[in-house]
Image (cartoon, rainbow, N blue to C red; front, side):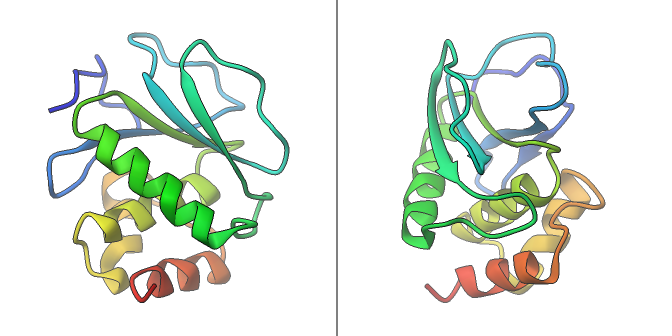
Length: 143
């Protein structure tokens, strides 16, 4: 199981028990332990971090530029979340982050048609902001 994050703010527990912190990069880094691995969902490359991170090009209110890369990176993040502190983040922490967390829920066994509701219940009630993000999650289960 992943090390304790120290706070439950923004932490999603997937059915397998894997823990992932979602957050918005426009907000200060939460107190407590830093991630050991992070995925940043941004239109531009993020600044360097002390921890290992992947940049997944993903413009605000849109979908990832490369859907195959998105699946690969999110699969890696979920696998690492079983033993490491993993963070998924975009600018505001709701749309892209919520969409990525919903896709990770699908990878972890949540039915694709229930993944958005799962993330809204367990992360933020307004996660996954656009109709095309919701459709992306539903289709993520088919790929």
